[in-house]
Amino acid sequence: MTDPHPAEAWRPSAPQENLRARAQLLRALRDFFARRGVLEVETPLLGSGGSTDLHLGSLETQTGDGRSWYLQTSPEFAMKRLLAAGSGSIYQIGRAFRNDESGRLHNPEFTLLEWYRVGWDHQALMNEIDDLLSDILGEPAAERLTYAELFDRHLALNPHRATKADLGLALARAEIEVANPESLDCDTLLQVLMSQVIEPALPSDRPTFVYDFPPSQAALARIRPGPPSVAERFEVYVRGVELANGYHELRDPDEQEHRFRCDLEARGAHGLPRVEPDQHLLAALRAGLPACAGVALG
Image (cartoon, rainbow, N blue to C red; front, side, top):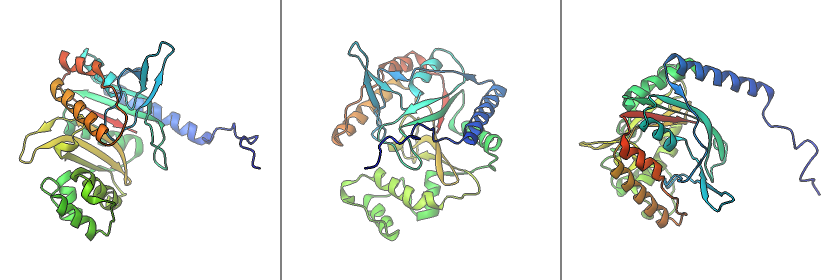
């Protein structure tokens, strides 16, 4: 029988050179933000509210007094409370936790860089990310495409107008089989096309920014009226891997509360556990979140 606890199992899996490279990376990141006058902060890992997002799993725990807490999937809600209290532009390098995420590119516990720029929109923040990727990773200037331009280039498809039938034909042309496609909504079919057709075709010699998503994929982003209406959100791909997700941030507390309710309805329809919305975030939005843009880079 194999020993489940071999003598060398205690050894860390990280090589020494990786630890040194990580320390150097963290110094470079802090220098980058210090030069730009962005304040470093640290927020709690435990919160009374979790992420209601259908695609994010919150890890839940209890303290001795019987209260339930959530390990944060990102520091976003707590950082927005600081912004509403007048912190100005801030950043954080910290741990995040996401249930049911494991694999070659994912781990339930990981390090996240998140920052917010007061008075900026998502276009200005993309400029700064371009600078960061150049300074830290030596990447060339990124290509920028709207979500619609990306689908037109790779699939000759308008994602803002496409029907389920259109998306089904696109999947068939790409020879992608999806179980019970009739039960899936347009956003899910678009995501299948994005992950299976578009992402593998993204350039490896420079980053790609994809921005202005369908409103149904807004998450925590503002929606700009159309036609077509778009969510002022972006994703950043480096060497074919999605590294960051950012927004021109939603500031309307009523709209945010509505989105929480819609998330919970969707979670219930998919048999997922209920997650308590973060009431402190809603209170901060009612107090007044300054116009800002934010991004999480994992």
